[in-house]
Length: 290
Image 1 (tube, helix red, strand yellow):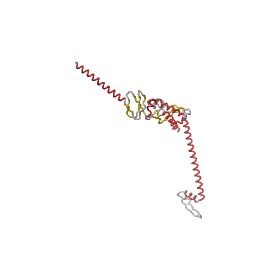
Image 2: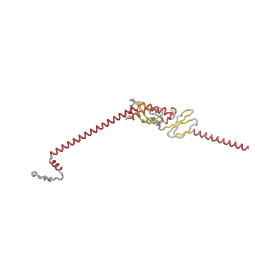
Image 3: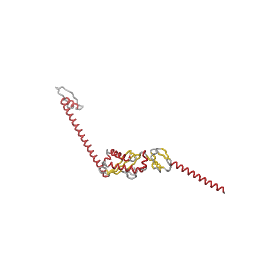
Image 4: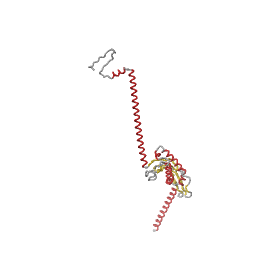
């Protein structure tokens, strides 16, 4: 009986030792894993130290060490990012209507869809983490509000129709210049402003359509008038050419009366025979035969 108890105690002790060993291995593995930081391509690592705060030196792509549990790592994307504000639901970062409502110089209300292409300064990722936070933070704190502010300000300097005219590239350039300066203060580098859809109020859109229809009618009328003028000029030229031709032909006939005789002969029927007689000979015609 004592042997059975001893064996049972040994079995229990063995299981406890095994469990402890497994727990130690798991803890060690967890510590090792927490002490490693893997930074993928196109990203930068930022370390937050419990005692010193955000450390200044960013981590480049690759595998790095940190103090387990005492330090936390944040992986920040330094590639091209986009933020879209659109009237279409689900197209941008916000699921509802996120278009930019603005008032133009001529007092018209317009709605603009825009996409902002940018990337954060890789060498200043620690400052961005310290001042703005993570991706979602600088989207809501800097990217979106600054873009809407600048786009509204620029649109206010132009008439509504300028947004869809040959002035559009100049408008986009002005937006880009102002937005680049605003983002640069926060270590965000602007790549491009894409001005997409422009929506006008219903009344203004109808007025534009009516104006375009009228313009097309005027254009069609001018085209028809031009065609009629060209046709008239063509007929005048043809008439003048015919008159000149008749004049030249008359002068030729007066200078060469034999041509009249030749024309007369050419117009005779094929069954009429003729010949040239001397001036003193009276022609005899076979009248029944004719």
